[in-house]
Every structure is written in C-alpha cells, then in structure tokens.
Image: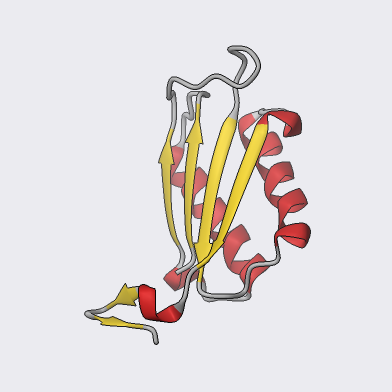
Length: 110
C-alpha cells in the first residue's frame, strides 16, 4: 500500500516509465516508501466523459496518509503533463482502507 489504478482513454507509449513516475509521486504525497506503492494502468480504454476526448479516472487506496484536498492538484497536474489530459477531464477517487482489511506478505497490516 498505497495502490494507484489509472484508467484512461489515451494511448500511453511508455507505460513502465509512467507507472514508475506516478509511484514516486504517490510515495512522496503519502510519505510512504516507494517500495510499498503498487501502480496499475489500463490505457486505450473505451471511456466517455462529456464527449470522446481523452479522459482519466484514478483510484488511490491507502492505509491512512491520504489528504485528498492537498493531493488532487499535484496528481491532476501530473496526468496533464505526462498524458496530456486536461484537468477538467480527470476524476480521482481516494479510499482510506482500514489496516485490518489490507494484507501483504501473508498477513494484514492491523
């Protein structure tokens, strides 16, 4: 944890680089080690948001350390800068998951 899932209608050329960069960003925003950040991307997805122009939906889950009001802008700016998707075509969902509901290495965190 944290986990970030990126869905976009845009075609991403270098997915590995984008995943690494967004992992670093989420790590810095949550003050959690990059080694625990998992990131996934589904690009070139069939999506519609007002029209057929590129859009993006991000899910961010973590055990604590989420501050949506402070994280939304840098994440939106990242998506715009790296993927070219306008900020008004981006939705972000934040979810604070109880430690007892998140497992790693065969056991839960709480």
